[in-house]
Image (cartoon, rainbow, N blue to C red; front, side):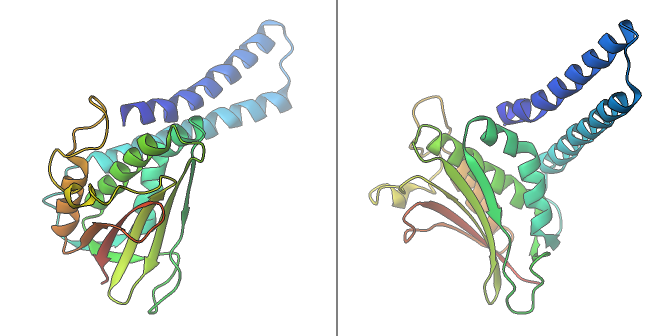
Length: 225
C-alpha cells in the first residue's frame, strides 16, 4: 500500500516542481508571460487538489471501522476513494484498471448503489483484493483488473476480477484459511482473504471465490437497504 501511495503522490509532486521551475526561470530572465504563467499556476493548484484528494481518501480508508454501526453506504463513493489511492500504481505498471457501474435493477438508481454496511471495511476489502490482483497479474502478458458493481434481488454485489486464469481446484478449499497463501516467501502473509471474509460476514454479507469464472474473480455481496 505504501508503494501505491508513493506512486500516487510522486507524479503530482513532479508536476508541481516542474511548473515552479519554469516560472522561476522565466522570472529570472524577465520573460514571464502572464497567460502561460496563469496556466501553469492553475495546473499547480489542480495538482495540489489531486494530492489533497489522495490524502483524504487515505484517511477514510485507514480508519478502524470494525466498531461502526451498520448504515447506508454509497458503494460508488468508496470505490472512488480506493481508486484515488491505487490507480496510479496500476497505471505506472502498465496494468489496466477499470470498473463498471451498477446497472439499474429492482428500482435502485445506477449512479448510487446503496447497501447496509460498514463502508470503511468494504473499502479495505476492495483495496486488499486490488493489491492481490496487482501482484498476480504484474508478470502476465495480459494485465488487467476490473471492478464491477451490480444489483441482485436482495444484494448489491461487488466483484474484483483480474486477467489471471484462476486458482487451481486443489487449492480452492484452502483459500479462506488464515495464513494460507500462494505467493512466494516474503510477498504475502496469507491473512488477506480470511480477514476479508470475516469483515464482510460481520456485516451480514457474503464473500467468496467465483469458481465459474474463467479468470480470477472474488465477490462480496452486501444486503440492500
